[in-house]
Length: 344
View 1 (cartoon, rainbow, N blue to C red):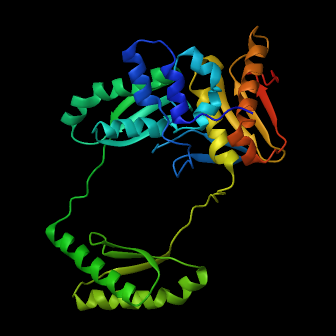
View 2: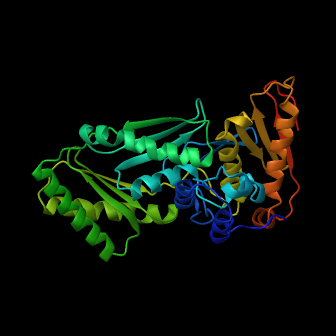
View 3: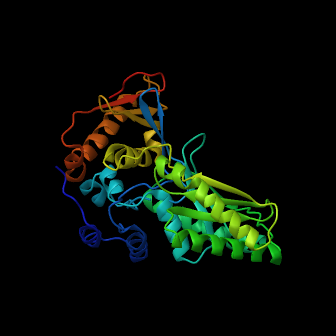
């Protein structure tokens, strides 16, 4: 089992090493972990295809331990375990940029079709032009400190067309939304939201609860809403009462494999060009981690690469944090070459 490193123990290891002070300060400032990731949130998406769950790293809110280039630390803390104990890459970039006061609309980290980090900047064109180079430098410093060398960087301006409302439309929204919400609340109806679109003359109401509850209250809510519209002399409005839609992807909070382990493996191997990893996937039964590389099986170093990847994954799975979570479940690691030969 591998010893679990806290942020304090990590800093102690750093402090023992004689390195230039400016580089050390930067590594500590960016690199001390902010705590073990609890979940990936809504922006990490796992797709299921013929029984195999393939991880697509397409993240919008959204990093991992700033992996120091200092070899002494790397020898004591397994690579994937360090990533597992920390933030995902997009979250780290976003938090650093926001801490510096930049107006960021989102950060995405993608591996297909190209490995790219994209940062979308909010604000005017003038603002974007004034901060673009500084934002690029911040992100490159993070990638360099983690030794993530496989990504291109795209800092773009977020183009959001703001809806221009007239004063009359603003007043309509305020009046109807307020009165309808108050009436439904006082009448003890379970609803999520009331939205008024005067440019469409539509009122949208989302009802929370079971299908039976929704069917029982739908007509009553419609009637209450129509009465409020008529009392305020608004003409031609349509009332749309809908049931709150749940995510089509059922999230299993106990699925640490799909929510934490596979994303860790994907970030770790996709972010460094030396691994030549093109995809990371897994299937639950039997538990199998499938790694594909761009090396041909005839490459001299293909076998060594496969063994190294295999070793890193097993080190993570055997660590104290992960082993207890997967409950000693049997698993297999398969590393494929470009020509679909097993190389581990």
